Length: 481
Image (cartoon, rainbow, N blue to C red; front, side, top):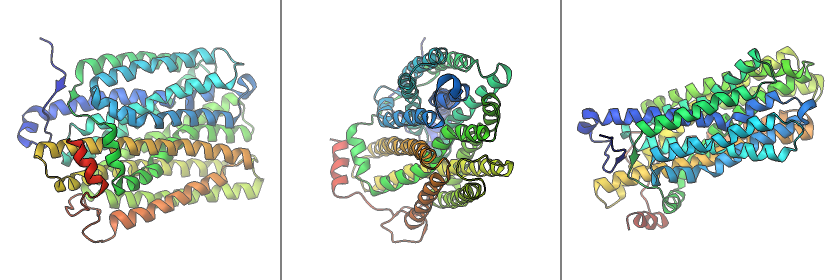
């Protein structure tokens, strides 16, 4: 007899039911949601790898053109995140994951066709890059799906693991690109796409067989309710700095390395190989650090962990500013970088990837804690209160994820403009550093320093937080109307 895949009554905080078997259901959904999200995230980063197979002499695209491909993919990935978070609860996480896996076959096959026909204008590449952005929506859909399955005490782990493993897709596809470059050369990009055509099909089948649908829905009104909460905007800005930097650098890191290797006199093929050898390591370490950030958020509180991560990002960002400025003064903007300069870039970016990953995990720990505390002001049943927490947390995950992806687009556009204006990355590094300083100040003021009982503080165990009021109260009432 076929197993039913829709669960109508799910209470993850029921310890008896959890130990009796619900944790196995949650684990199964965690595994397959992560598999599908990981592969979709890889497709989102497809063009960060494809550009390494595109010498300017053959395709006619400059470094700034290639950064525009990354910006297009990140923009679409940002725009679809809230709709994807809503769709995964409206249609069910299982059914939506099947659809979102199959739809990514279009840009994957499209990339194979485009790279087989050099000489085409830029716009079809931009369209294809935009379609890969749908993979960015799958990331938030996976988070919204998993968040509903786990109890409050385990949400930091569940969200951190999902975010980290899904983000590993950016490193995985770059590792696949490295293997292809090293074994088949820079004229075989179709092999990368072929691998992912197979993986997308496997993910769709596995999701259809082993995932479930939860009966809770995120609607536009829920998103409006989230926007009425001041902490939502603070969380979104913190996530913009942490996630936007991670996502943007994962798109741009290989291009920055390749640009500098070519400037140092290497051929395109050799520069692409050397860039690929290094570029996957940053996203890999950052994705693993995200899992650690979620666990640390559970143990020490999201606020202190986020503050520490941002402080470390300031140090790493300042180091990159120093390395790039020294290179500009020594060799002039756009001059050939030395080996020491390249080592500095690699060390600085790697550190940023790691601390951005920690920050991503700890910021998301703050989300369910905020709404769990605020739900105590609601005059509703315990079941409705739990549903409200899940729905509002899922809506904020979608909103924060959207802002974070827009930050990734901004990273690519700022780097592109820096190259066009000065021929170097220095001014872009300064802009990133200023954002990290602002986020650190906000984290200290809002989530760490001792404060009155009407403001949220760092510990995940704190119970005295600001109660809903005004427009937010009306929006909450409408949720249960």
